[in-house]
Length: 112
Image (cartoon, rainbow, N blue to C red; front, side, top):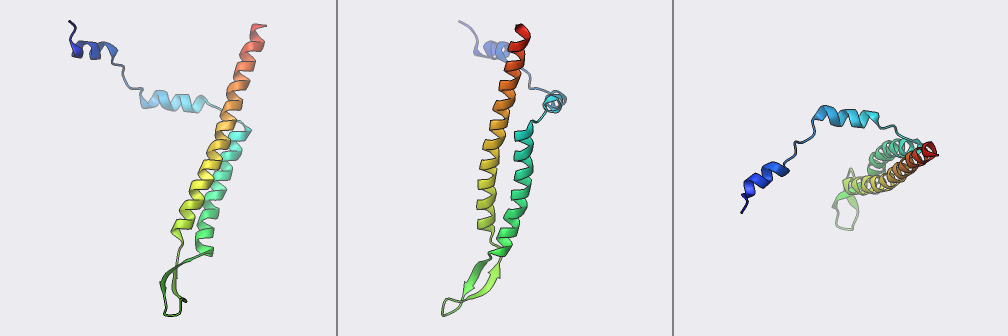
């Protein structure tokens, strides 16, 4: 019968160091799709702030349903940020798939 703690010690791996993670990230080159998605996200982030300011929310309504106080529309801004994040994430993922396929193509062409 084996001891559970001995098995855990055998299976245990050290966590990667921050330096190795940073080196792996620095090695990765972004292709056109990924760069466009990052730039688009930055632009859409700013547009979300602008939209929250352009379409303010009513804080308090008067007797006849008129808006007496207006404030920054945070819910619209967060909704816009979330949607733009999802769109840019999908586009970034597409760029990552393209880069993986191009690496596979390069490796296959070297074998021939």
